[in-house]
Amino acid sequence: MNINATLLAQALWFGFFIWITMKYIWPHLQRAMAERQKQIAEGLAAAERGKQELASAERRAEEALNEARARAAEIISQAEKRATQIVEEAKAAAKAEGERMLAAAKAEVAQEVSRVKEDLREQVAALAIAGAEKILRREIDAKVHAQMLAQLKQEL
Image (cartoon, rainbow, N blue to C red; front, side, top):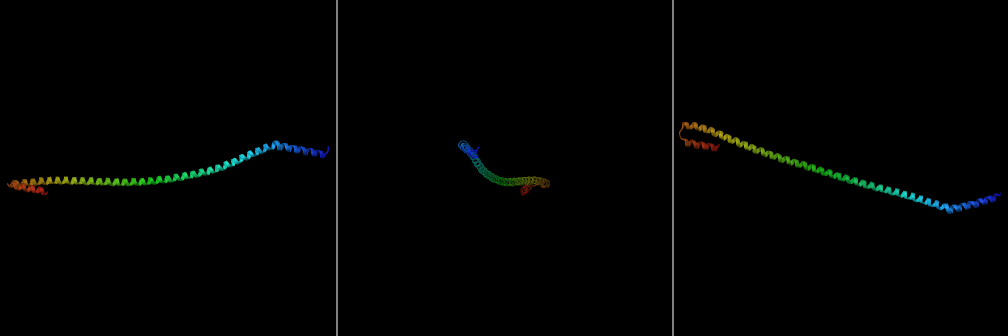
């Protein structure tokens, strides 16, 4: 065997093998690599979209949280205003009730004073009548004494 012939035969078989590989195997490998490259690109794009959606969701969540905080502050402010209003209403009601009770007490005192004055008048009149009766027993002029008693009663 000749080394040149063997080398030439190996070179021919190697060329034939390359041609067969290029004709039948290489397109399948290129298609598989292109599909894999496409899947990787889609995965990277999906990851990027996921990051953007996550950032967008975080912004929306932050906005919702800020809105909720503002609403809570508004509700607290309204509650404080309502509490102040209720306190003021209670103060006004208590003042009105105190004034009503004071007026009732004054009216009761006035009635009691009037009743006591009337009782006192009756007692003075009874004493005056008793005194007049004693005077009348000593003197006979009843008209003069009746006028004096009436005048005394009017003055009291």
